[in-house]
Image (cartoon, rainbow over all chains, first blue to last red; front, side, top):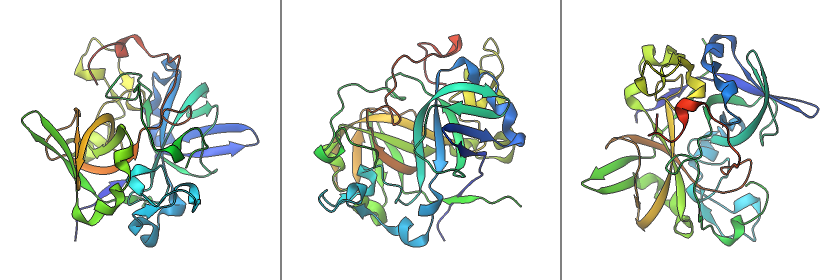
Length: 144
Length: 144
């Protein structure tokens, strides 16, 4: 049996009307100290609807579920269908109240488990890249 | 007992002299189809040296191990010490040979498990953010 790693949920995405909140569990609240000095964060979440044995074995998809897009390896897409269904979203922090981080928006359902948060760091080799080249299907459309 | 999620390693970081390679396991090679149309990728890896019960319970650190930096919540740093020791690095693709992706550089040790790869997508709400604000200790220094 192959070695696996364990992920613990540290919180969840909450959506109430237009309000979008990253709600951290009480046990992890101390990990937020100083986050208010950042304007943006990266939310790591778990695409739990894609956490099935079949989906985790799927290695190629038509991006965005559109057959007009060429069959593509999942590592070349942002599809939730992939061996390890981890999502990342860069979000703007609107305010922080205790263990609740209110953000502008996130492409995730209410109740989605959050597994990590990192500050967004606009440096090469971390999060900021210039002169990016992508396939045509990935240009200027909603997230896959 | 809290619910946990399982992560399967899909490859590893290989460093040989100056050559830096993301080596995907044969079972996952089909997931790379089309990645060559992208200039940059985000490598998700597992900080295995931080995968200890003690480090995974640590919620505050002095960034970069420097006591001169204020004690900060791990979710406000890029420290490898955190509940789920996931790393992300944006890399430039130099070439792809089968299941080996040669990249410009990565802040990871030889042998580090790779858990996901995604194309870098320079769009707001995905990977590109402008007008970022950060704490002073995070400005223009090496990666924490």
